[in-house]
Length: 513
Image (cartoon, rainbow, N blue to C red; front, side, top):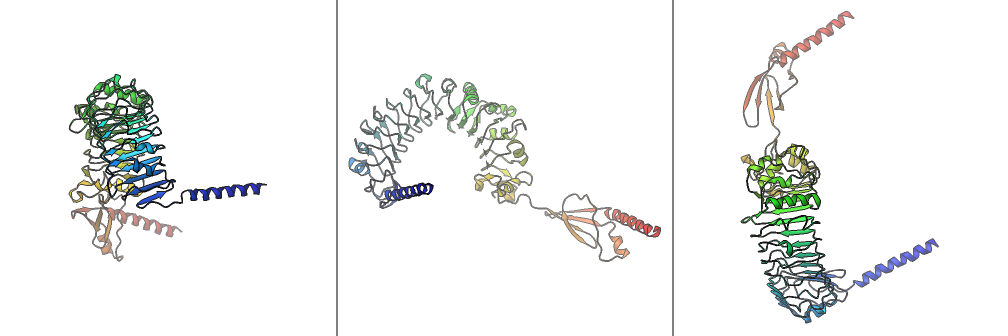
């Protein structure tokens, strides 16, 4: 009975395999690669698709399509996923997408669409992912998104929007409006929103009563003229926030005032795990001295400070940090490298980036005491001094698989001059220095290090004349730089005395016996 059951199971498995193979056994359209129900095409035109294809992607068409019409979408009516990338679109015809009534994911990227109307998404109630990044959208009519009752992810990044429509589906969980021309934010009361990106807009200020997002987990704020308020960045406003990104620009750094900084420290102790600061101006580095924080990922790139004096008393202490990026922030990097040891050790740190920080050396002793478990290190674009004692351990660690050096071709020596612009991994920083020792009868080569044992002088014969020449050999040390050092030693006399004592003792033993 057992064998019969196993036979039936084997037959069932074979049937499933054959059925699956037959299900996807169709001719793949020209200019396309097909994998199961997915067809990815580059160039050519939009082909007629086999009904078994449910996911279709095309980019860089031979003949651009400026308008997405119903005649085109009729060929795509069985799709659940559609990606149109760089095909020249400027307009979506009203009702064209309604033909694809089972569509779940729609990506129209890198085109030139300039307007969305209230008829654009008619009969698209199944749509859950909508991505319209990198277009030229200026206007979205009110109620455009009304049919999208199940929409979860909406991305409108890198467009030209000046205002948002009056309606956003309350089902949205992820909203990305980065890099537009928004100057104001309409009220956002989205019960399920978990991620909001408003960075790189023209927004100057956001009032606390404009946003009610108690479920928010990730937030990005900032722009060239943005003013942070402690009523927005606060634990009471975002009690469950796990990732906070604040962004300014190099021409206009985003000022983080003491109240906002205090709120961030409180959030780091309660909910915050990731803190990303780009082109921000801080009052002090105390934001990174948190013995009981939950932060695991901190990026403070191109960060400046109101005054440099406070940095002398600052300490970087993030006990649970795993990723730390101070690229372009030399004051933070120097504070980190000179923090007291071992009180500020970071045993969980795996990735450390200090590119463009003016770092001249990164010592192995610092790694062993402060960051013993890092696996990835970025020291690119720094004036590194490739000395025998400062950097020679890094190539050894890389060769042994203990460390990955990021941007290794851009991690080059600055000094000494003969190693300038040579990558650290290929520079010969610590050549083995040899010394040549000469006597009247022999020449020996030893390491140019202090000798703790007497030199052994071996002569070519046992004559007393040659033996006398070995009593005080004159030693000339010739280094690799061509310099000479003369020295004399009593090692020959010491050895002669020892050998004489041994011979006398041996003779006495023979006589007594």
